Image (cartoon, rainbow over all chains, first blue to last red; front, side):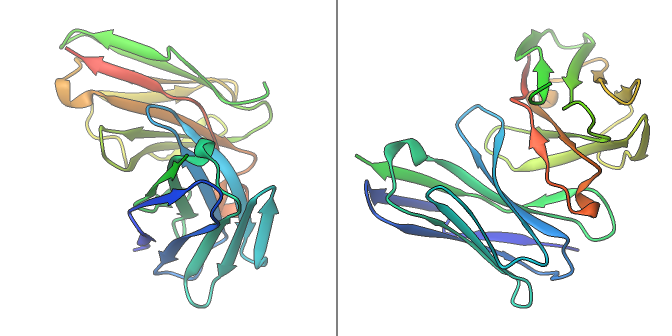
Length: 112
Length: 116
């Protein structure tokens, strides 16, 4: 059974700093990995989708990496802004079916 | 449409009443998913549609919950005889062909259901 863990559970950093969020998964036989953000009381917004054949994806100030063999992904946020404050979730399709297994989430607070 | 649309955005209902939640996926997306998120909890898978059929209904918590999808497009999640523990945010997502084929999910904004 796939298990996805995110560390840290919560993170507070001053505005302008670069930061890294971590995601680890137990079953490396994944098709892809997706990073989402969730604002309080809202749905999920897709940030980046990395296919299993890729090592990283970039979108603006965000960069996500994937190391399948070690079961790890990182989300790097450059020059953080208060608007980046949200909960960040990583998710992978469960092996053999269509469910997404979500990580436990990292609650990020950017201090102005 | 441009995104996944869910309605209503908020629903307050009395215990014992039935409710219907609607999801309009991105046009052309064959895969559709329902999840729910209880307060302070993670996302719980409910059901997956491929076209109009539901190959995986394993997440539906009881027989009070049902879902259908018509025309390979709009889906309705119905909860009968609502209970207070049904209070949650119900999220719908769609995918072009499915996550198992490498396609990502796009989520709607959710329906916040409160059972009083």
